Length: 51
Image (cartoon, rainbow, N blue to C red; front, side, top):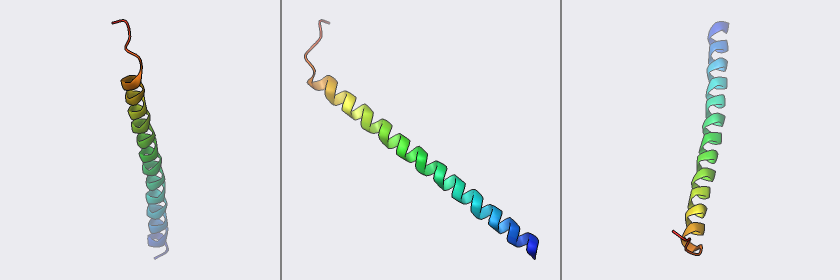
């Protein structure tokens, strides 16, 4: 019975770690998207280049 409890604890810990990693990836992706959008806006309103 003790072994089962340890396995359960281990699974919970892994799930927690995965959730943290996913949350960090999600935040990173949002930041990246935000940067892409602000870059687009800057280039849209920037003075036209020589090309």
